[in-house]
Image 1 (cartoon, helix red, strand yellow):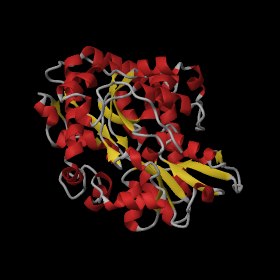
Image 2 (cartoon, helix red, strand yellow):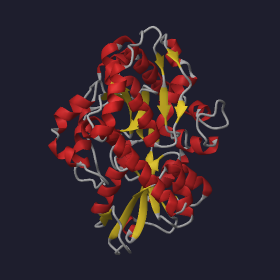
Image 3 (cartoon, helix red, strand yellow):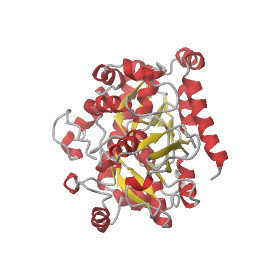
Image 4 (cartoon, helix red, strand yellow):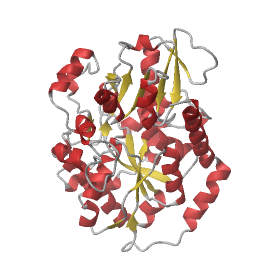
Length: 399
């Protein structure tokens, strides 16, 4: 990685900001609204995804033909290399089912007023803070740079909470050398993070898997803390769909969600098979990651739990969290808490819209849980996913 990579990441973010600017987004929204209505019987599922383990349920649903089982027609999933590319394709209607960072969903809905909704969670956990091998505590990050994949991400939210709790000041617009109590937070594509750590241009990164496992596999870094051990069973990526599809094609939408929810249930009890399905050794090679790395995330050796407890990467053993887990119901309490915490998270660009939101009302406007509720009940209820039979919960955020 070099300075050009950082500049490219910033250009990518600014491009996405431009897409969501009022005048830029209007043509795409108008184009989407004027698209000739599709017949429900011939409407195709067009998946867009980033090659990270967050995409697992979408890829498994495709690989296991769970959409076809619902009577749907589905195109091969389209891999995108950046969030800007993925969101641009979604805005234009080129894809109609995507996984999206949960804070980004808040931003697109309320920061740009784009008509789309969360219909389910895609997974829980699945992210970590990875650091250089000589870093042993958050305090050790003082005067250094840490990378995140996007400003509007749970990674940024959790990282800044952790740094502030450690008495460190977050710097998002670095000018000159960082002070000993300052941490520079920058945006990098996940694939650039391990090389940047190896070359010592950053001292850590907080990102989705399998990039934390990659650093472990290559022995260039170690996990300082899992985000799921800070915010219990938090959502990272959500399933995002166009509101017009939910309104105009409710039967089709229900079948799409049915397939995704069934995939999540299958993933919970077939972790070894999941690791094979989404690794690059398995055709059609939906991700570029080797099986050994994917397996370390999805189906880790039980002995690793003891190791992470000994290092402090896991502090809440009683939570009994998996490194990545699958549970589709989008709890309202999470979205409410997320919006509240996003208000105190520094980002590049204008985030003033967050202060104008009523978190509870916004959560209800952003999430449409009609379809996921029916899908869950069809598969045996919340207990099938290891939860109590309730669609409410209390958020637990413990540093």
